[in-house]
Image 1: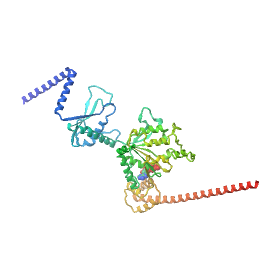
Image 2: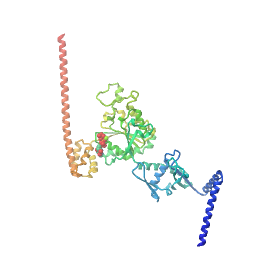
Image 3: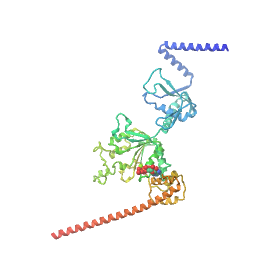
Image 4: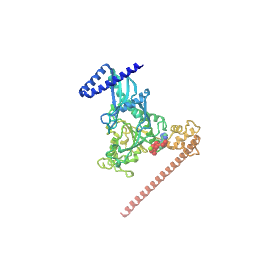
Amino acid sequence: MAMLMEKWAGLGSMVASILFLWSMVQNHIPETLRLYLTTSATKLTSYFNPYLTITVSEYIGGRFKRDDLFLAVESYLSDACARRARKLKAELAKDSKNLRVSVDDHEEVTDEFAGAMLWWYASKQQSRGGVISFYPGEEDRRFYRVVFHRHHRDLVIHSYLPFVLAEGRAVTVKNRQRRLFTNNSSGRWSPYRRKSVWSHVKFEHPATFDTLAMDTDQKESIISDLMAFQEGKEYYAKVGKAWKRGYLLYGPPGTGKSTMIAAMANFLDYDVYDLELTAIKNNTELRKLFIETTGKSIIVIEDIDCSIDLTGKRHKDKKGAKESDEDEKPKLPTDPEKDEASKVTLSGLLNFIDGLWSSCGGERIIIFTTNHREKLDPALIRHGRMDKHIEMSYCRFEGFKVLCKNYLDVVEHELFNEIRQLLEETDMSPADVAENLMPMSKKKKRDPDVCLVGLVEALKKAKEDAVVAKAKEEEEAEAKKTKEKHEEELKDAKEKDERNDKTVSV
Ligand SMILES: Nc1ncnc2c1ncn2[C@@H]1O[C@H](COP(=O)(O)OP(=O)(O)OP(=O)(O)O)[C@@H](O)[C@H]1O
Ligand SMILES: [Mg+2]
């Protein structure tokens, strides 16, 4: 035992001496020789070692921004490989409500791609002693390193790494907190802060296509349209069109236009830009706002007919006809030169939709909503600008069944036949139907029977009101007609009298 101890002690002192000697040599041999020795050692190892290594560092070049590939690798490994790792770390991702679990430093995870085995390590490089840096990441430079057999060199560089980049980006998009943007009035724009033109809050609307009450075929058609758009990157590039699509949602108030936008955003996982046209002074501001939007987003202009007067001006101007004076809304000049400084023009808006500025990226959906489609300029809503026109209509039985299931968990009821009949005969918006299915008074609680009886009563009342309103309307129309006829007769009589007077005087 004593001999063994002695041997170990001797070995220890020998190692210590070698290390000391090596540090002395390092300090005293010239820089070039040291470099030469290191390079030769690397060459020698690589001769015997068939494995290659690629390092992906956290900060490269512009030190303020984390490298895109690094972030993608981090997301990819957390999503695809973390289950195989035994040392993980968890953190609350920035801008996100989710916990993010990723592979911890010095932990190895294996991955397989097209028959090739790959080993990933996460690690960090300590900064040179005592340096306090202003730049983020300067103290601890984190990196990921992938090791693979040199046979797979081309596969890894040309296929695997691009695959990791795409997958990692997709995971990042999936996990991000989506946002609802609204445009600030230009008085609040700052020339120094690029992001001051839009303000945002978390987008947390719970609407989905499952909770949306509407005709099933129409719903299916919208969903397949959205899916085709989302997967259509190559197609749009092939036909030479900007990767964007326009939807016009029209219908009476409370029929679910805004809810549909939220359902679309949730379905596609997109951000929403709610563009308030009345807060914009001119086309230049409109253009700037558009440039500041990002891809994977829905740009919405709600109640387009109310925000600004865009109705039929092009036609009137073209024909040189007089402008109608019934409209009290602010007038929209068609000629940009005339009032460039103070107005958003129709042509400005058309340019906006046509994606003249699509050089700043694709994958955008533009949605207009209106209660009065007929009031809009046909140029604004022609196909190519608003590719799909979606009518949101009054609640019919199919829509009612969706609401009934969502609000009351009821799929069958003895009152359904009566309700079906009443819904065919009465125009009631889904918002009003929903209101009847969700009574907030304590007395009624959420008893489905009580709610449905209440709905039947409301529908009957709406039907009676509609009959009364129609009768009144007809009465008014009749009275107007009689009045006009009477005026006409008076006018004729007056003219006749005048003619008679003239004949007498002659
Ligand atoms: N088709 C629908 N499916 C499910 N819920 C609906 C539907 N339509 C309306 N609602 C309910 O009614 C409320 C109002 O709907 P929403 O704001 O989407 O109507 P809108 O068509 O945008 O109305 P407006 O024209 O006044 O803007 C929503 O909160 C939603 O809960
Ligand atoms: Mg709305």
